[in-house]
Length: 122
Image (cartoon, rainbow, N blue to C red):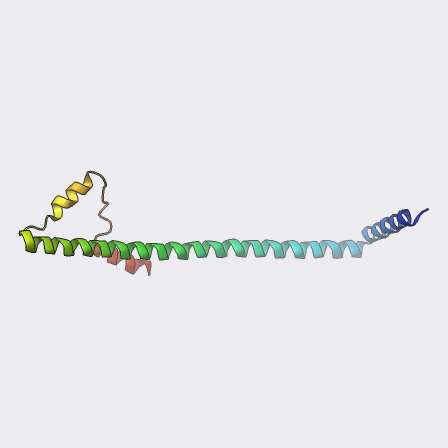
């Protein structure tokens, strides 16, 4: 017998002894269970953490969108005020009606509603 086949024989003999001993089998099963439960716990924690991070990002995006809408509504108001001072008319509805041909506005984000959304988001 050469040394490589001798090593394989010893290795297989050692493995068969390990698997035949109930205490060793119990320890192997216990170790495998511990490793598996740790891996499942880590994966679950990772998924939950990612979900909370996504929710936080969505809240930040909503806050930014509400701020942008408030800004644009204030720009519209200021523009209408200047237009009224120059020509006597604000043209508020005229301009909005022109835009409605291409785009609809839900009306959900009026200044008062935007403030309410901002308060409820916090």
